[in-house]
Length: 141
Image (cartoon, rainbow, N blue to C red; front, side, top):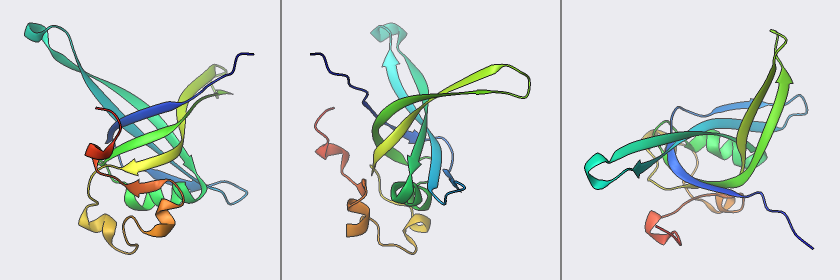
């Protein structure tokens, strides 16, 4: 019996401030984009390539991301890939693949503006997947 797995883990920097909305049912949803860079090529022809990922978070985690994340922050995001489709006003079918995040770890210190209000890394945040972490504590390089 073969199982299935849909799991994504990325580390990168936010390309813009997150956007939070509420659904008609009152569920919080926050979206943001993360840039992940890597070096490719031989030593004499080394260059950096950047891949952009769209992230969506829900409920308490969405609220925490909207409150604490800012453009440029370094984050670790864990979740699953999801592809949505819709028909545009132009009659064309459109597709968007995004990461539905269930864990977001803040890998750098919160800027002063983001620390105002709620204590950064408080117990409540830890219960919902959003906690600061030292990048040296990650189990991989």
